[in-house]
Image 1 (cartoon, rainbow, N blue to C red):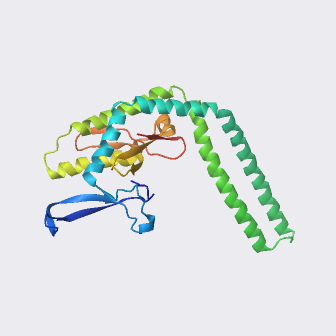
Image 2: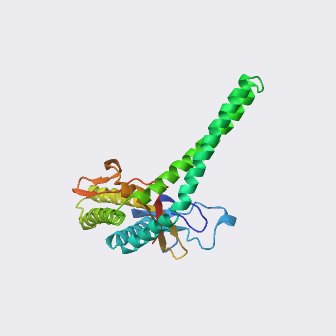
Image 3: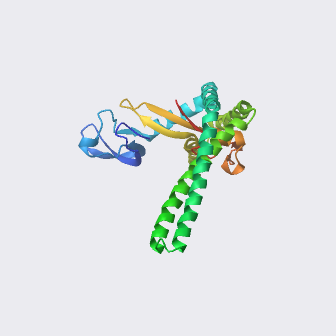
Length: 261
């Protein structure tokens, strides 16, 4: 969670409170607090609320996530726009891919030229190592960019993408429905439900921002590449204690769609 100070909020447990007399007394039940860690006066934004109870923040975030998954028309519409944009940019992406491949080939040729010059005695060993190191760093950067670009391009080769995304949302709905309907009987079960909800939120939520009125804005992340490729069972969330299953994939940046709720 972030505020206008652009600082990532942290959590603490509050065991005390001020009574009507202004005296600091111990709370019967400790409460959780999220707060902004910016304590330098000049760095504190006028739009920063400074703190919020963890119960209030957790409830707001979960409700927004649940609402979005329960009726995913908006999410699906965002996905359609994203896929359409990728298709429109396909020609440019392919041109970028060809450019990167040519640059990588040129670097390989340049590396060989440096080695040849060193063998002929035109370069010292230290000069050769320095130049090869610089070329290697360029090559690693280009290959990383090419790999990411390749993942993005592959989305245009997959058919029936909308049905796969709808299936993904249906899996999420089934798991979250079960979580919502579970009635824990003990503190241990309550904590287990909290951890399961936290796992869902950590997987789906990219960022939470809080305004001066303590209203939260939630940004979801959907990795369309992983969804369309089917992901792997290792990326799933298994809610075993209550017999719940929902397929939630690991997220990577390539092909990832951010959606603000």
